[in-house]
Image (tube, rainbow, N blue to C red):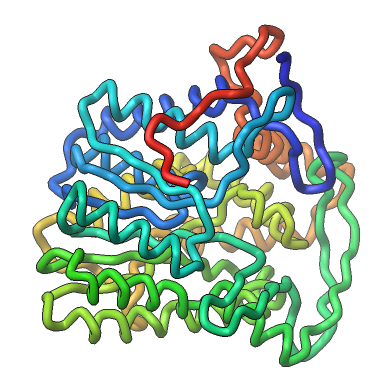
Length: 397
């Protein structure tokens, strides 16, 4: 079928298998161009199909020649209906890994569930024995709690008072005011259950108890802090509470891995265009201004550049891993440079519908958003028939 992007709000309802494959190939090429990383050799990536999780799997495999197991929850294709982009990304990754002689298998299912945890443990035991790195990169708006059976939903809300500020509709470029009512305690609690550190801890406990964590195993989860202009709706909002919980959980996991000499880290990453960030008011406008400045300064990074730098310059340098005063790895260091944030703040004050195309990088934002779904890549003929039924070679459902 000929596949075109079909938009509904901040979601694209279609994905292009050939475009997703091109995206994966581009990321692999970047990692290989940066040279070998003396890193982990057996890696489990939880949330492995898009964004930072996919970039982590690619960096481990093609930077360190690691065997990888990826866990994700993606929709399969049907005749005349495309799969989700993460499905096609994973299919392309496995195909490229096989060509390179690298072990790669994937599990498709609810990573919050005990069933998927057990499937993963069984696969590690059967094929790898143990893993020496676990990447935790889940991004889900809902979580069915495996103990209580309660379905929890996260929300994007400020805490304490109504938040009002500028935002942009990245499809139209229209800059407007947005107001968001504050969260109640139930909203906060639900968001922490979905996006906090409990599931990460449950994964690590299950893996440890099953004996599939190697001596000295490292685990990493991803977080975000961001600037003052977004903090009311992000770091000081419901998501921020969840990230606080995630970051506190890293210390608990490190304590639990003591007998193995293991360590848990949280990496604070840069603001990037994702399906999740596109849904957060204020963030698209901030990213549009940030991209313009960081590209002009020559320090702009996408997911793959961030994660390659995390692995090569922070985790595997034969030196102590550098962290901030709260024990976090800061790979958002270029974004949060004082000079860059001062420029963003100045532009924010003047941003309007009329001047945003000049002072911001809305075109870059739109391009990155389309890329998430496999559209807008050079070298792909989008007028040609594509095989929407592309399969993942080793999928375990």
